[in-house]
Image (cartoon, rainbow over all chains, first blue to last red; front, side, top):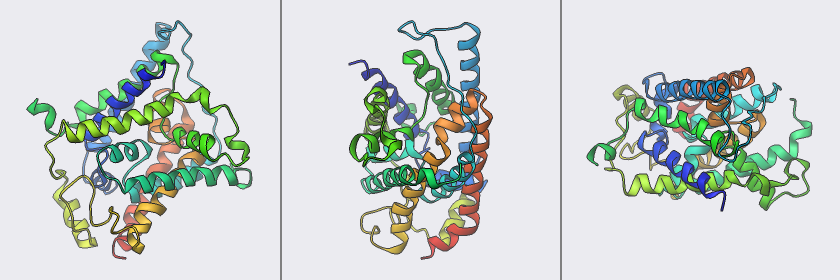
Length: 136
Length: 186
């Protein structure tokens, strides 16, 4: 089962999301009201650690544990980044959760968030349905 | 152990989250991102002949394992590693939210909004269902979420991800400052 290692990393991620209260609707409210540094500290410093890690991987040309070259695919700009980003932002402030925390909230026993997750899946499905008609 | 059971400060959590980026790359060339999982579920369960969902989702099934891991991690953290209690947010935020109609501050989420008994009220429906829909629609339209764009994308210095992240924040500010006060009072 080559995918079990990703389950383990996911578990660690889930534990961090709960323990740092990132999954809390109140923390997201605080962030968007600019009344606490907590979430900015988490996202900002995670990015700094991420940048350093990727630079080190490139600098030392590290390979995966299977010996493959590590490649980070380029993201190509499209207007969906803007329109979709704004729509996601509106939703993020309502639910107080982006996709990762939705899963962690369900694990934490907030069963009603299963409905939110199903609705998010319906949203993704609707995007797939309308994709060719939407501006990108 | 007592220390683990307390909420973790941002400077403990942030580096750990950041390290998920190289961990996934080193374990198999996977780029950190969660919202792709939602597309995976669509492709696996309800493809409905939509071209966007016609791809070999089994090849990317690692992210389904990752998502299930997050659920298990959430369970472990809440039931084994926490002293449950209210979130220590800024008292100004609490006061504002109280003014706007939030009553329950005892847990991670306000139970007077996010519960099955609220699901069939207009307010509950908007917060639980409409909010989720916007998250699922918006992240896929944007090509990623907080993990895929804000953390993974900016970490690999991709400017479209910076644009997307700024838009996430603008959308969030607009909702919180101009729309949410009305929604909370429904």
